[in-house]
Image 1 (tube, rainbow, N blue to C red):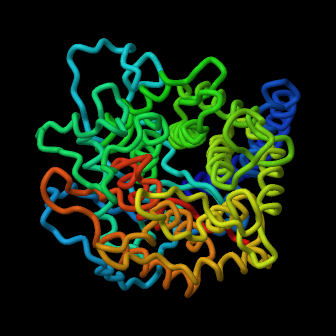
Image 2 (image 1 turned 180 degrees about the vertical axis):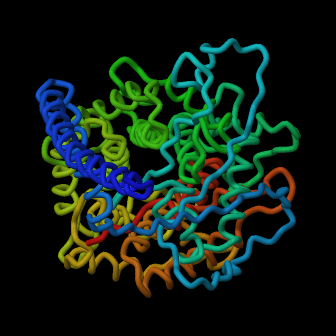
Length: 526
């Protein structure tokens, strides 16, 4: 065979070898595949294999949910934050009625949240855990403030998130009204006693400038000093003025003032829960003190106040005439609209703080208001349409005002009666026929801060054009008469009816509360 033949056989042999190899390789591959499947089956039959399969299935399901499930609709949350810079107080600045200009915006934020910075106080000599400003045994950064309070439709404070000071201009207030409030609070702070109270007939002794002299007189009697029997009630009014502006014993520029006032008030509470009350005497002290104590607890949630507030509320319910209202004493059998009004406000403050305020107490108050209201809608002090309880001056009397109609009107709304009801519409008309006015310096018989306070809170709840008319008249009567300059800067002369009992402190606290109406309470929705 030739060389080429050898090559030929080699090629042929190689081809055969290659073919045989392919056939053998296919068989071996099939054998390996079968063997691999058997191994996988063996592995998957174990607990580890089952776990792997379950995890793979779970991962696939979650991936499907993530990629294919529809995304939820997100609700836009708008938080308005305003930096509040404390300005230096200028007692020469006129507190006029210039309206705060409205801000043009694409979207009006109805419920702004405004964050205030708390005054920082550094103490070196108070060990941690012993400062009663804390809610626990550690000095935490939290203020424990619930900055939302109110009576009626809900709760809010001066800087609250629902209507708060964001509604100042919207509801008819202004930079002028707020300046007047700040001036009043400053005056009250300067004239607080060292023990924490506001001394009704001795406030002038607390002035550091030593320039205060009770000078205001009415018909020959000095009214500046007031009656010392009402320190608890007047002190509570002063505290309410601070609380109404969003100041508490834990929060705000006046927190030390509020803390001292509350401490003194707690110390005046008796074992039966009463504050400043002696059988046979006026119960106004206890009514207003209960309101202040409950409101302080409601806005701060300070657990150390709860027992004092609840004990005060319990005494309120004990003193109520069964199924009716209140008067002086415990279940005296007689009722009057004035005391009943303060008791209702105290109970509503308790209800806001989630204290035990029985609904039967509110039902009884409404029963009394119905008994004391005439068919024309006028509520009287002790009889239907009987006018107010007014005190004689030495040379005559103050003009009667429909003060009790204002008391009954706001209490009806606060206890759930609808603003569309006929009795409320009639009361509204009576108030509008007697809007606030300060005729002249020589004739002040129509001046009644007590009536203006209750009337203002009633008409704010009513709202509409009547509220605007009332508000303009109230500002015209109140703002222009606030003292400016000197040590009496921020106070009001005790001109009105009942100022002989409460003096300058009473007049100043009550007018401050009146000017806080724009952010103090929410309007009832019905």
